[in-house]
Length: 312
Image 1 (cartoon, rainbow, N blue to C red):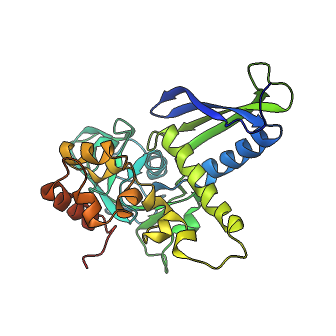
Image 2 (image 1 turned 180 degrees about the vertical axis):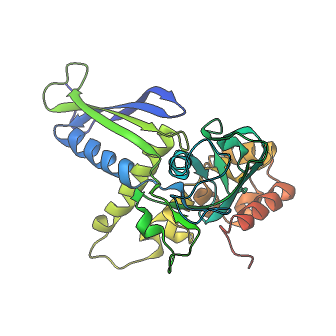
């Protein structure tokens, strides 16, 4: 007979760059729906992503203008730009640049991208210049955010002539579904199994998306757990204790782009997130196995570069 206190176990049944299928059991009756629905809502609207919010095209004043020698009209070109999927390494706005001349087929891989961002679908078709005299110069403003943001909200102050705001789809999660089944092993009707599937645009893995959603839920629920108690540093959410946003705390160390040695030392020590690193003191970091002063300096330089710590 199963005990009511049996700890649920999680298994990853399938995993790809843009997909994950997870099973959790046994959950008490009703909790599978509660957990599944909460995760689904956060996954679809509460995961930060990056998108192009406005565009400036040389010699083009608005979206109904014509671009000489280009096969597509401006509106079609802008719709293609919206399909570019961007992975944000740092949470700050930036510009991407596209400059091409002559008869050529243009893809997202032709765009110059700053170090804070990465285009994950470089083969995406954007446009074709037909003539040798064709020229296309574009500046794209990129920002991070949540969910969907209509073009009207991407107008900064007065709408300047030549700046074309775009609808921005920030959410990196495309679809989420969950299913509640009886728990396996003849556990009876008092226990359930939760199957949850998440599809992403490959700017974030399915596993990372689910983990981020779970951390967001935990942060919000901590308010109820500690209500009526005096606020202390220990009761603050982990990200607040180290002066980061929740998204910065959850940044995987891979995004720091450290050397192989420094990265492996941190990973072997169980430090998988930037926030976990910042909860360690300098002395604690320097005592990590094979993590010497050179690796420490490299780490600090990367954290400063991404504005995750102050110079003082």
